Length: 299
Image (cartoon, rainbow, N blue to C red; front, side, top):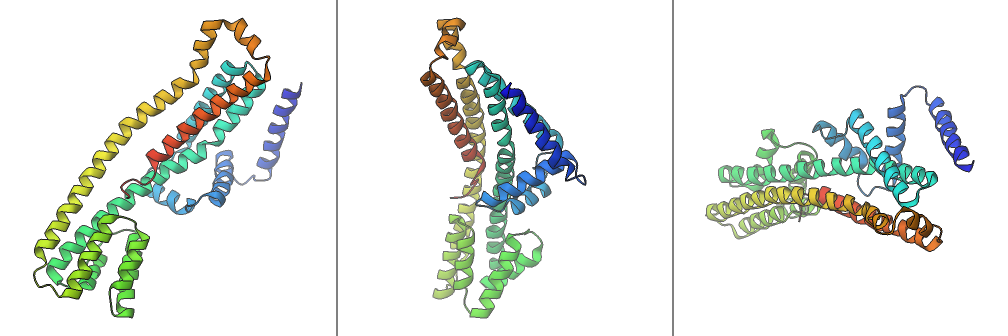
């Protein structure tokens, strides 16, 4: 009785909210409101990351969102029914699982954005070194990279800011400090430190040092791409193992029988332990997903 009332109340609430937003279709209505809510609690700019992911073609399509909702809701309902044999808990866990779809979509966008930033950092450092070999001046090198068209936003705007800061202060110290704080990559910090030493010491033969720096950049890029392959392999194994853990309850039921398992569910502490097992496994799964999708190439 109460379950039916709960389901009807959810449907009525959705219909009411949807009717108030007749200018949008249902997908846009849900995506807009979930995105707005997530942007309020996210430590990063949801809008910036999502827009760049759109440009890179990495954002979920409507079809992918639909598949995710059906898959997550269906699996969560099936697993929770195996644990509790309760329609109420099926609905609760299905709704909770679907609520994580926007978060997973954001993590995918964040991974694409992180990979994009690393590639831009690689382009920035490589081209500054190449320009310096021609101009023998750090600011002129920045201007050459700025005008070359190889950089994209937001790195392009930050390079323009560096150039302006260098001209305003008459030194490169503030500009380099600004870039080091903006992008926490050791290859950027090491390259900037090298240019500070060259500028202050007035080195006339910097070719060997810059060549060594270029080799460091190439080695870093190689190690980062190797790490991506290792991460992907580990991620697939981790997810497969985590999903299998949910189905250990089937082994328990085979060992003690379904009737014996149902009798255990009559004890509140058994039910509480089952909920705790689901929550712990879900926490570790989400932690692994977060690790896989963030800080690609960053130190």
